[in-house]
Length: 283
Ligand SMILES: [Zn+2]
View (cartoon, helix red, strand yellow):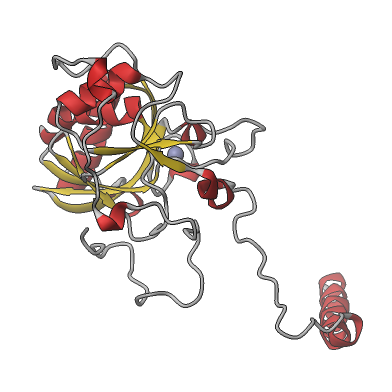
């Protein structure tokens, strides 16, 4: 007991001494030059997003069949070039894929809505299977994101535009978040919907990996789907030549990629903190 007390005394002394000494030790920062440390140094997306270019005709090596199928299915999209690690990067110019609305989760307002074409196609194909669980919307917070797999020296599937993170869903069961309702009991309609939707995604074979809070602590607040299967395709008649003559659209003003876009919020929050249980604003 005495040992702990002495340690405590020494510790508190050295801490307070350190606190008093630090202003003298540290150099005074140059006026007007307070360099903000990047909040997520492991996240390369804010740097790489500056390099992307909007294009209208696919370049060599892109998945033309996938693009043509989306076009034939009437899914509007913006095609990009120079999106690091992504072969056929597109931004769907619709929030509705396969009858399910993809809403941006409130906690990551600047995440780019960019994915590999095949990921988008498989989300469309998954729609009817998800709707069986009464789902109306999926709240995503991360799509293309250049980071590594946690604890590994290996790029995440997000870097290839082949993964999506979902923090919440809504529908006939109400608004269900992974962090609050995943373990709310088998009788809870929200838990049933979350488990049903993730199981439906897994059973569909549309994505080879579906990771939920049951997988590890890193997924306690979202589920992650990745690696879209190449065997499932939209049943549409299409012609890859249709891609050579792009229509003048899209010209939605708010769909322009903004070079200043940052993955992290800068400055004060645009709105007060909302607890996770609340609904995010609608887009
Ligand atoms: Zn993920």
